[in-house]
Length: 371
Ligand SMILES: *Cc1c(COP(=O)(O)O)cnc(C)c1O
Image 1 (cartoon, rainbow, N blue to C red):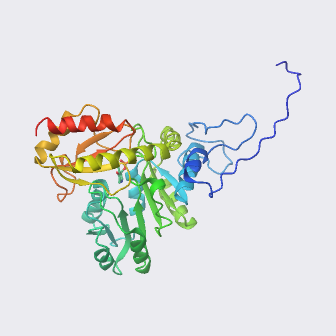
Image 2: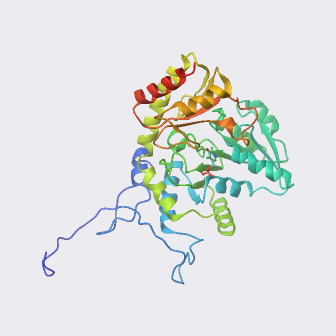
Image 3: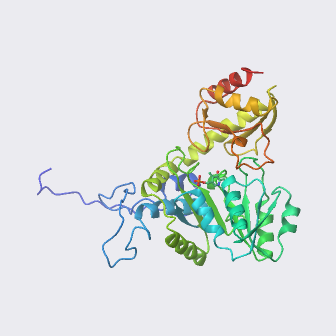
């Protein structure tokens, strides 16, 4: 088109991204650039360690537009204000750091092993005390919430025991006891469970898992409703330097555009596989809470059988971590850091989005190889 040709006037309506839209619509549209002519549809990857002086951000540790886009999208899905961190464990550490010296943290005995590791470390250093509970025993958790408790840590489902907490009842009990409540929502994702609506003060994510969803980025996040709490956590992130990688937030935002499709398919596959595994002669127990993409199987042949299974599959990848598009599995007790009350033969299956019949054929063949 010649330079002097008349151009059509483009009038672009501002899209309505209001929270009354359903989650799938929000997952696709949240955190996009303002709609003006020639604006990119997707948030650019802004690689910047510093900014021209005089603005609101000034330096790369204090903020980045790509982080902000990821935070807006996750915030819209969880119903709060999100902050991205360098990893899930950086998010966990920053939240645990909120408690005063010598305060008590009540936490699940089968929380993620890294979270338990941080609690154990804090106790060893005399920084905080932890009280580990059976998260499914609501009365026992309530009884543990005395005046010394500053924080109730919930994870539901737990990793890897797949226990379920009564989040609504327990966050109410924590509030009554004057304690903050936190939910690690990594397994459920905001599509299956929104803890802030169930009374939690803080939500934590390993965005490494389902949110990013492709096993290629380490990233964490915290989501809160309270503006003051948001600012305190932001200040901790600035001070500790627990800041996300820019490429990682971009990848996670890209991943979140298909979160609803991936979670739906993984859950559909997991439901079917859990049902079939229940009837498998090599399996003594199946743990599946009825939602999500993680299934636990305990094997009649013990740890040896579990190790063999992990080495015998061809479609399922033998690897730690979870929440990727590809199915993976591992025997959790191969890690020294895993809780001693997790059965030796427990194999955690992270069910991906492949064809369920291929996943079943591979598992069934591997399970029969030695039984
Ligand atoms: C993986 C995981 C974490 C830790 O996240 P990283 O991104 O690996 O640091 C925390 N909580 C749960 C439930 C996890 O599965």
